[in-house]
Image (cartoon, rainbow, N blue to C red; front, side, top):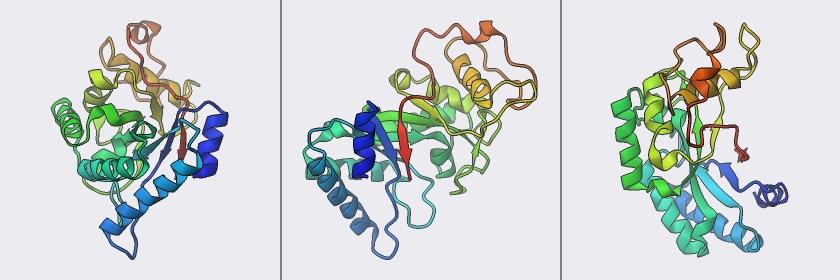
Length: 237
């Protein structure tokens, strides 16, 4: 982790995204304390650097930590108390992980409710990065399986509540969806991004990502605020 932080600094990457980890044979409380102790040591070793370490929410399989928003808030409090460096801590919100972890994002109303809960229990100001992914698995399944935007169990309406949220408009967003090209030669990342752009100024694009021709340019040029991109960020497991 120390090496990853130093690499980010050398490359002028402001955010390092990583999973909290699992407590395995110990206890949840011991796992949380160990993470805070690790942060204290890491920030001590890299005290002159400003790279922000972002804990990513998980699906919560097995003994993995970080599924609950309240647990992420508890980690924030433990880490900031241990390190005295709250400006170097952040959270990465992953839509697939949240949905599969039990925070149902499958409609506009549901996704807005989840974002309101995230704000109440953690605070959206702590969200520094968003991983924008649909989910092959059902809400609450605890299975981490990513899908193209709008083609999984979240669906297009659910993403509007996340991408279109005012507090997240300027937050870097990273796709972790399947890569390659569609049948028309359009990169799949481009097709997914166009769908997400559409929430910032036009009707959501319903064409299959892997099939028909790309949407017109007009549908992607109305955004007036920062939109999802493959942002400068480094993710590590």
